[in-house]
Image (cartoon, rainbow over all chains, first blue to last red; front, side, top):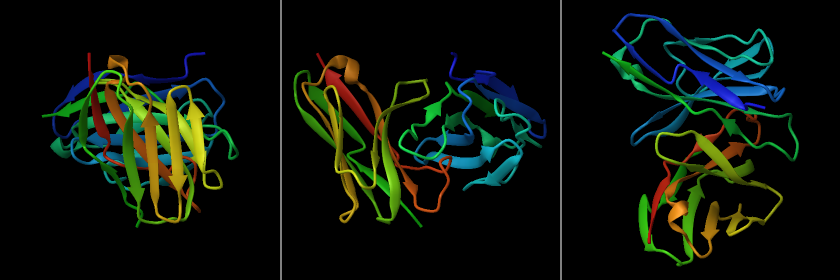
Length: 114
Length: 114
């Protein structure tokens, strides 16, 4: 049971390049989310998914796309990287609604856009 | 719009002290509140989750309380140890929001000196 895994751990991009941040969980969780963490801003929700085939926007969705074709995977795509997207990105998952709504976070991807 | 505030932003205490971290939120219509721990360069680890109908939760030396009417939660750490040094974050899920949609405070950075 690996929990939530994220790849890559660190990435440097040039402005305008595209890339995909990978996130996978092996806990059969329905809910998955992407957050970015910036100094002085805290964690902010980018996109989230309540199940395979269903996604929705969070607080800061611009410049990012997501899809959820399987329960396990929730990739985040940067379409045309900008320096403002330099951040640490965290993926999280949670089980169905109920008492056990604990969020499980991945180790993060550190992205630098030059 | 829900806002979550954590005070203080940083706290330094000698080993063995009991301490309290504070979290306040502006909209009392929350579904639950979670406390997380984040070590430098790492992801978030869930410590305690309090449902809106609960007043407190305990895990080992940690005790979290919730007062919805006043929009406050506290995390009490008993007999602090150097290994407790980390950033502590609280997050709320609003009623009507999905499980993937947490609103975070900016955290309290705790340093426990030997």
